Amino acid sequence: MAAGPWCWGPPPLLPLPPVLLPVLPVLLLLPVLLGGARRLRRGRAGCRGCARGGRALVLTAHPDDEAMFFAPALLGLRSAGAAPAVLCCSAGNYYNQGEIRKKELEQSCCVLGIPASDVTVIDHRDLPDDPAVEWDTQLLATLVLKHIEAKNINLVVTFDAGGVSGHANHISLHSAVRYLHSEGKLPEGCRVLVLESVNLCRKYISFLDVLISCLLPTDALFILTEEETEQAKRAMQCHRSQLLWFRRLYLLFSRYLVVNSLRLL
Image (cartoon, rainbow, N blue to C red; front, side, top):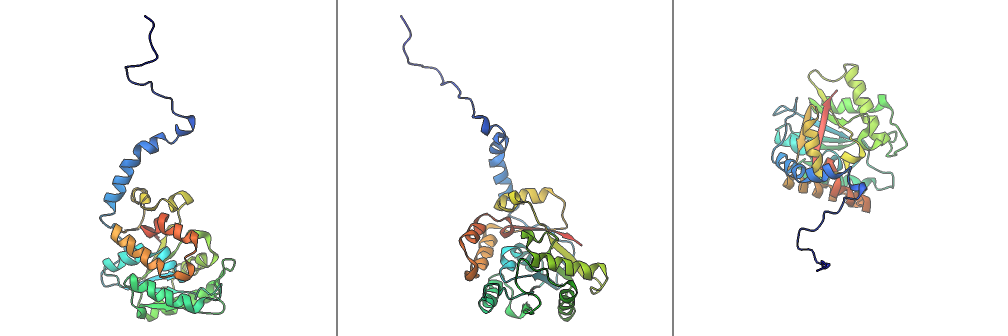
């Protein structure tokens, strides 16, 4: 009798579409990566130069940088007993919102455990909030050094030469601090850590970048737990004037709200 259309054995395996073949290893490893990254977030890696009782200064260009980019470092330094302060070098007045943004900065720092007395804004007319303007290195270096000396700072944390987003104001901070460091103008024993700029793919994979960051060489690595990440997001949400749709996506996907990897100058 002729066989019918029914099949009682296992169904035949369908071939994978060619487009999926290159990403198949990643898909297979994804559960392992997710589990590994979550386990790593339970602890925090160390930091050279983050001595308990020291004075650390996080140097930013605009209100919201402290939450958007440096929240892991600020929370990690607090946990290490390094008493971090924030020096913001502009009021963020690009859209004439400077006074609003100063208040938002204080609210954000309060969420991150930084008192208003340790938050300073340099609102100098020659340091405008403008992505097309590179700030004068000598002027900026003079203002930053004055603050470092007045506050007895022994650790400075700021952007690297890529400025994370390529913003000219961010890069100017690195140029000024690099000048102070290379010319030997920083107080004796004062060290500088710069925040690593990563490629676009790593920038927007959230906590998955924890595993990658742990495998790469670095001088300081701060990793937030899930609870601390929510704290960092609450700090960013204090900057209500800046919460456009793309920054809400940033809150969901940015690795800088979970992990900071830094290098010594």
